[in-house]
Length: 310
Image (cartoon, rainbow, N blue to C red; front, side, top):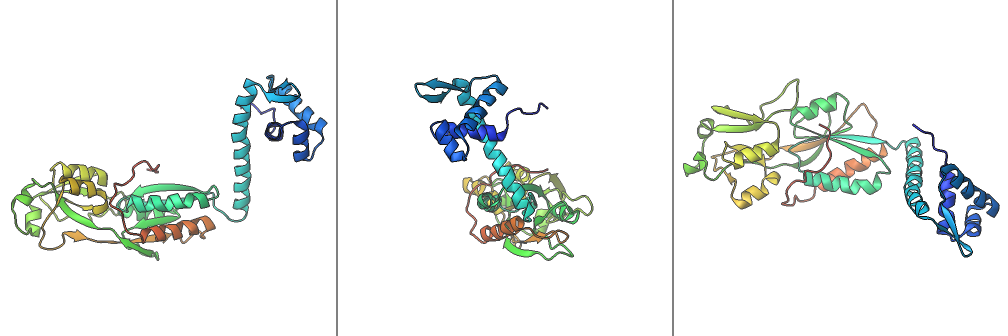
């Protein structure tokens, strides 16, 4: 990689000349002599081999090349300032990154609101988001590769902070044979049908959470795939209400009239890594997650364009 010949100080000097209307004004603002400012800009043009300024009357104005380079230099100088600020925050104990693992059933909308509120307070701290299913969250937390975890499981040996519940509804397509019975449904009715379940992403002790021992079981890799299968008439499933608002409203899915257990509301918990002290950015994110979790869930579709670690 070629070492830059022009320094950040030189770019700042050129910016000052343009922003303040001339060499004398820039010199006053920078607390330097006018000759020093003039020499700095002249040296820049020599090093770059491109004229940056031309004289128009008694005023120096940018050339076309100068306009392009100055515009790009503003980004460079700004990024350098952000880098120095981040280093200062890290010296004070501010984290460079918070690693968050979330069960895929947790409402995306609540998480997005919390992360959106975190951005202006983050001071450059990144969030590395990872989605897992059931015991997959527990394994990531216990491996030490997450600072925070949101799970519907009571993880042994960890003290979780209670969040809200996530409502799961037993549903099938309106034309499914279970709905054609036109009566309350028993466990035996369900066991004779195909159930769609989401694969536990854990490797050590995966769980068959919610499986009723149906004669047929299709295991899929994500809740979104499960929604698609069941909406197309392929089996039944318990699905999070926040993920199927549209399908319920449009009639692609219909709640199953079970004798009992048609709705499940598991409590979710927010866990922290006990082997890592909580930094200020992590604590801010914890507070925001709890704040937005406590707010009522809006009937919106989950946003799918968040970058995740897989």
